[in-house]
Each structure stands twice: as C-alpha cells, then as structure tokens.
Length: 131
Image 1 (cartoon, rainbow, N blue to C red):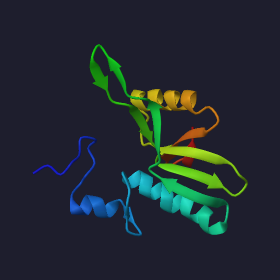
Image 2: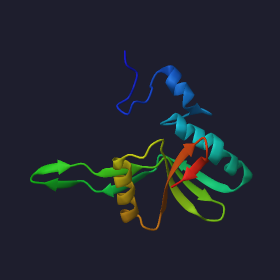
Image 3: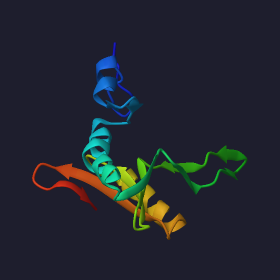
Image 4: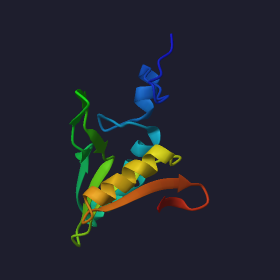
C-alpha cells in the first residue's frame, strides 16, 4: 500500500511523526525544520512578533468561460511572519523551486504588491537563505 500523497509526501504514521512539532503537523519536514530552527528561536527572542500558518490568498477569482465555471486560483502560504520592527513577509519554504511555484509567486506579487514575498531554501553550505 502506497502511503504517499500526490505531492510525494509520506503520509504514513512514521512520515507524519517526522514532520510534526509540538502537536502541529507541517506539510513537509523542511517546513517543520524551518519553523523549529529559524522562526521559533526568533519568536522566543522577541525578534518575531507573530507567525501565522496556511493563510489563503486568492490569486484569481472563479470565472465562467464558454458556459463552464473555472475554480479560483489560490496561494496558501507556509508562514506569514510579522517581525517586531513591523516588517511583514509571506514565506514559502521550498526544497526546489518549480516553474509552477515561480508562476504563483509572480501572480501573488502582482495581486498583492504591498506584501513582501520570499522563498526560503536550505543548503548545508549556507544554512537557511531567502530568495
């Protein structure tokens, strides 16, 4: 029996355990690590004021084309972070940035030009980095 999602995420009990922290199940191990290693220490030090997860943003509303209804296109953030100095950023944690990710980021930036958007990646050489 295959316990993987369509995004190749391990949905077995062991797989869920590896991406759970403090009772919260994250979408990926990398997202969980980012929270534990990067966001949580800054939250505890008071550098970060607030963190929200899985915030929905509408990129394109639903519409009808030739009598067929098309669903809206949404972006769901990994983290919305408000720093103590007032800086707000929407974060998408990625192991590898795919073309669809770049397209959604471009749509997000067009629809919400006043909101900062960043991809976050990890490398052994550089640690966590934003791009």
